[in-house]
Every structure is written in C-alpha cells, then in structure tokens.
Image (tube, rainbow, N blue to C red; front, side, top):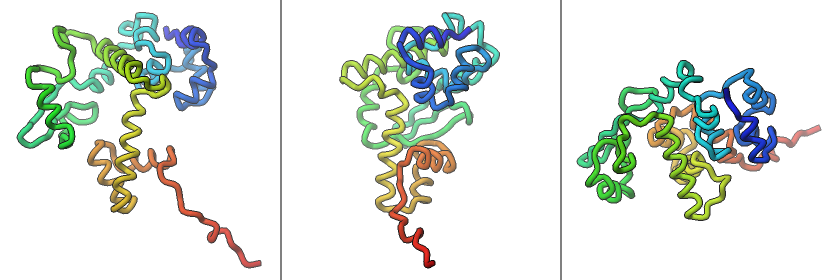
Length: 226
C-alpha cells in the first residue's frame, strides 16, 4: 500500500503543491493517496524525487510484493542492463524499453573524459565499485542514483527543487534554441529528435507545453476594418 499521504504530511506539503509539481490534477493525486488509482512508473519516480525518498519507501518497504505484476517489466526495461561503447566510432549502444538496442553518438565534448572514466571498469559503466551490481534489484539501483544526485545537489549548492529531470529539460531547451539560430523549427525538431531519441511529435509537444519558443507579436492579425 502506498503511503504517499503520510510522507506528504511529514514533508509539510499540500496536495496541490505535490500535484502541481507532479503535473496532475489534485483529484488525480488524491486518488493516489486513497488507493483508488495508482501512479505509473514515471510518476512514481517523480514522487520519489519530490519527497526525496526511495520508491520502496513510498510502498512502505513492500514494493516488490505490491506492484510486481504492474511495474516489474517496465522497470526492468527502463533500467539499462547492457552497455556497449565503441570508441572507434564514438557511439554507444543501449538496451531500452522501446528497442532491443538503440545506437547514439557520444559527443566529442565528453569523449576523452568518458574514455578515462571507463578505462579500468567492466560491466555497467556507472555501477558503483566493489558491488555485485548484477544481483542488485532494479529498484535499489534507481534508489542508488537518486541518492547520488541528492548528494551532488547538496555538494554544489543546487536548489532542492531542481530535480534530476531538470538537467535533461535544461539541455534539451539549450540545444533546441541553438539549433533554431540556423535551422527552421521543423528541422530543429528533427535534429533534436535524433539527439534525444524522442520522436518529433514528443519534441514538438515539449516545446509547446513549456513555452520554449514564443510567437512574434501578432497585433497585426487582430486588426479589423469596421
């Protein structure tokens, strides 16, 4: 049973505050608290970031038993179990939830640092050292990285409201605006979709919902002759 309500009250947050940050209606969030509906895995991840607790804590330590049927497969697909880095072609092949393998280029700006980072490693690129990562539960892997990000945020004096997803959104916005300096909106979206792996429709929706690009003044369109 989710204990969202208990955690929310301990954090001294209102339903509206959490619902707004989660991007759902208050009535939807209320349903999560009462058990009338269940958040999907992305919403669970977001809740764990908002409350700064693990997903397992949201379920009072009974995550595996309570949601195995509903969430186990998506979580296993979401967590990348296989990495293959080709430093000759500067590409990385990643197993994802939508494709068996997805190939992405490694930006030149990080290639040297990545080579140094993985030089004495084997297995998963970002797995903690001296740990049997292969036998670690997927939820515990997520919790590990959530905790690492929290430590990083504190060390660098980053506002607690700046969540892990904000890094992705910040750089998607930045790259899109750089592309728009030389490309049309349509071509910028196409180029960005190749970089992020999202389809063009998803990128377009992101730009519209977050007001990344505003229209020019449209006063002329409102003029009428009476």
